[in-house]
Amino acid sequence: MVKVALRAKGLAWTALPAKPCAGGGDAAAAAGFGGRAPLGKIPALLIVEPRAGADSQDAEAVLYESEVINEWLDEAFPQPPLMPHHPLQRAKVRLVSRFHDLYLEPALRRLYPLVRPSPDAAAVSAAAAEFYSRLAQLEEILVRGGDGAESCAADDLPNGSGGAGAGGADGAGPAGATRHGGGYAVGGTLTLADCGYPALLHYADIIFPEIGLGPVDYARTPRVAAWRGVLLGDPHVQEVLGELAPAAQEWVDSKMGRL
Image 1 (cartoon, rainbow, N blue to C red):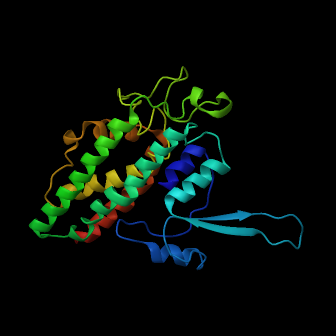
Image 2: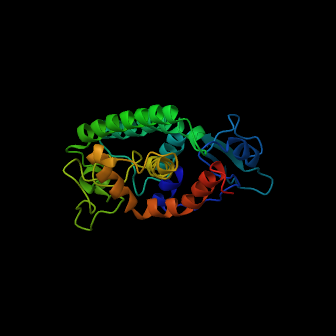
Image 3: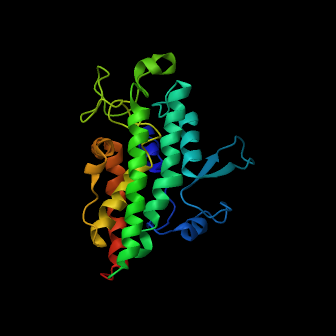
């Protein structure tokens, strides 16, 4: 989630060692931060602000929780913007982002311990049913929330500045846009609403076939399916998934006893 925002902002950062995996990694992240993050959670962002003077000590701060980090990034580095200007559209962005953290990701997480040879079929079925139920709720949120949204289009931003994302120079939405707000979660450009979902959907895509569920049935949720296509075509998302995919597959292979 945070890496998508960092890429979209064009920011440079240094990654501290922490092996990413679907099931955890928090302890490694906490060790990498030298105990600076009291919750020991990933992602975490160490911010260093240099101070003038040879005897001055740099100021440090650590942020954790993806939503907190991403909103700080958007406020500290406002161009290109990843939040709309209008209060209602900003609320819609937060709603979609919060749905990821509180509902869809926990539903997917129920499947993590089932990624093993010969998992319990009833447990797999129950967890998959919950995931599809949450996906259907997300579909409704996207359909209702995206209609008429301009997101970070030029006429929606303070001072008329242009928006980020895959839209054309004339302000048109990206390829794959639908009638529901331009293809992204809220409107026609990438916002913070989109940032958390590429990794989640990638894990779902590789986990479902491994435990006998077949490919994720996105036909049940056509708005989610169209949105997923737009995300997969976004260059910032592609960069992040290119880094994530090998580690995600390694995690699955280890759980399935192939390593």
